[in-house]
Every structure is written in C-alpha cells, then in structure tokens.
Length: 133
Image (tube, rainbow, N blue to C red):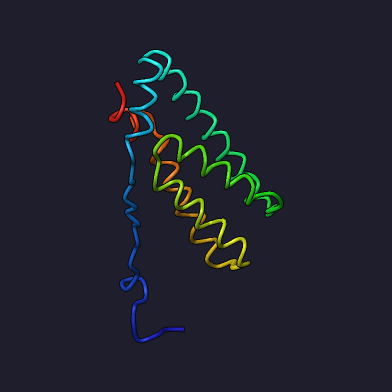
C-alpha cells in the first residue's frame, strides 16, 4: 500500500529539555551547621537514599503496582525539599496529583518527566556539587 506522502520524512523527534530549579539555602545551612565534612557525608547519604527511592518506585511503576506510591512520592518530595531540589519536589507532587485524579495519561507523561529530572539531579557532578564545598 502506497500513500501519497513518505511518512518517515515527517517524523519529528521531541527532546524535552527540563530546567532544574534548585534552592541552595538548605545545602548552605547544612554546611554552616555541620561543617564541610559532616555536611558532605549527610548530603551524600541523602542522595543515595533518594536514588534508592527512585529505583524502588521505578520497579513499582514498571510492575504496575501503584499501591502506596503516593506515600513514597511524598517521602521523595520531603527528601528533595531538604536538598533544595525544587524541580524534583514539584514534579513528585504533580505525580501525586495524577495518582489522586486517576489520570493514567497524565501519570505516564509526568512519570517520564520525574525520571528525567531525577536522572539529571542524581548524575555524578550533578547540580548539588556546584552548590557545596
């Protein structure tokens, strides 16, 4: 079957470019209160916990088991807030709203955004090292 238009020439690849919004105040406060060594340890541990939380939620969503996901997202929001990761906190809240509304399409889109934001936030040399030290 031949259509009048070659459909492959009309494909547009979308590359979302999410901007990471950060608040340096929580990190700066940790450094002032704890000193550089202790603050670095606390921040590193918090980032590890955040990565584990994301990994667990990814497995949960992949398995289509959304039970208690809202609670886990709320925990992620708190962790992100404590680290000044404004974008991650906000998108986790948006995803909780999608769950509450039962909007599967919005959930899929916001989940993809959460994964992109988390990935960029947790990359070695990501946004936090520029704020600390």
